[in-house]
Length: 369
Image 1 (tube, rainbow, N blue to C red):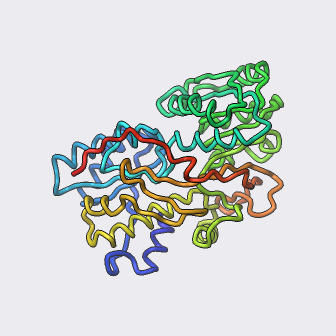
Image 2 (cartoon, rainbow, N blue to C red):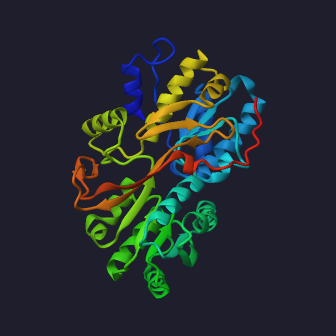
Image 3 (tube, one colour):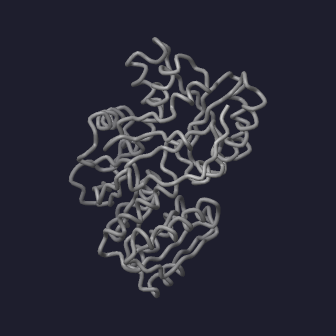
């Protein structure tokens, strides 16, 4: 965020020369503390907040701001969601005060299922997900989309596990997958529930490829380790990866600049468009009024890494093309780098899924100010 803000400020800032500033507030991954920090931001007269990891935190923020903004029209706040992906936030729980700049679970699963339908290796699929709101939404979306987007795929297993690192040994699950004859694993797991799962697959020699949402984030790449990437085929879905030949000049420039400045690979291009679209909305609104900025964001377009993205007005859900990429230890271009060290893994494009194939219906009925 700070890197992109510096880019914007170096171009002249917003509203005729004002500078953007990032004010970091640590929620310690605690839902109650998220609200404490949100209140601190409001008391500091901060009108725009962003948060990502953890749909439980996002839900608390959405509910709090719905009440706060109604009761305090002179102290309204907009929330920019960068990574909390539970689909309900732009369906039945949609809010004028919430804008999601990441694809939701349904969009991500739609991209994976579309690619699985094109992949002739996919014949038998085993699903394993975390037993909480996000994992269940992944499960539900996959069950709905696989028959339509990958009709050749037979679902031979479907399990939910106790989430957040409670499962220490995934070997029994690997045995079930092997017994099922699955050639493909479809999982939304993240954190230790993904790392231990993939490591167990590598150790036991599971002959199945993994289709994932979070296989490509830094903690996954570092935690799984290059040696295990050699043994297990991992695919991920995202809006960007560093080695795609179609990356726009703007995305490439930000990625190269960030690598030089922070010694880390750029992997979430949505941060670039979140802040740039915010800056554009401020200039369009002509002032920092959250209602006017929100209205300016509705329908706004921006050049993503490979095609236009749009903030859909009816539900405040970004609409975008997505890329399915495959991890390789025999990368031809850039290795994934973190803190100046190569992690020994790079990404190569498997397929781009066009925006039109990921534009899904919404049940949002938004109350507007």
